[in-house]
Length: 185
Ligand SMILES: Cc1cc2nc3c(=O)[nH]c(=O)nc-3n(C[C@H](O)[C@H](O)[C@H](O)COP(=O)(O)O)c2cc1C
Image 1 (tube, helix red, strand yellow):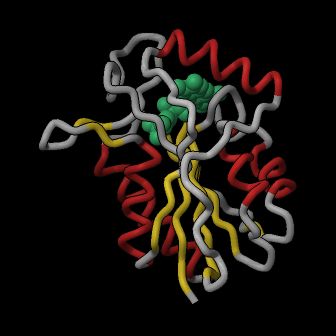
Image 2 (spheres, helix red, strand yellow):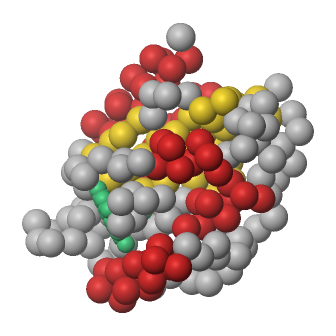
Image 3 (cartoon, rainbow, N blue to C red):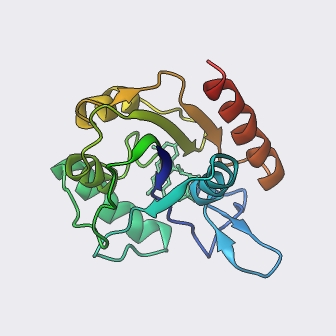
């Protein structure tokens, strides 16, 4: 039996660590200058500590980086309840026991692509652990909406809700602490 980390992350190369303005920070600048998204950074810790394989939820459509345009597109998707088509097929889940599902909050919901994933992946009988990045508005009712979409999965009721205002080191520590907590129950 094995572990899978499935996650959606859309770092903003123009505003990775926040500029103190109205746009929330999204991602971190790494030592080599590359940008890692907040959820992506969390996924990497989980992958390492649980020896998991990973699947990045990406869509055929490419989302823009510039916040104001992304805002218009993603608000429209949420209003319509779109299910954007996924870029990669769902991996073979037959031997997977634990699925760690990560997403950023987008307009008090998960990105619609996360529901595309949940409606395609057969998670029945699997343990589902949620880890979420947000700019301090919380996870709204996504624990419920995801539980509904992940038919037959056993959804752990202690999601990790991390702030995108943490430093990368603080974030990594929060993930490790949460993993220890959920795995020792
Ligand atoms: C389009 C969009 C909508 C967002 N909506 C919310 C929100 O409703 N609540 C919240 O707390 N943060 C919101 N945020 C902030 C993100 O959740 C936060 O920046 C997160 O760390 C992004 O993760 P990523 O870098 O892995 O993509 C939003 C960000 C974007 C880009």
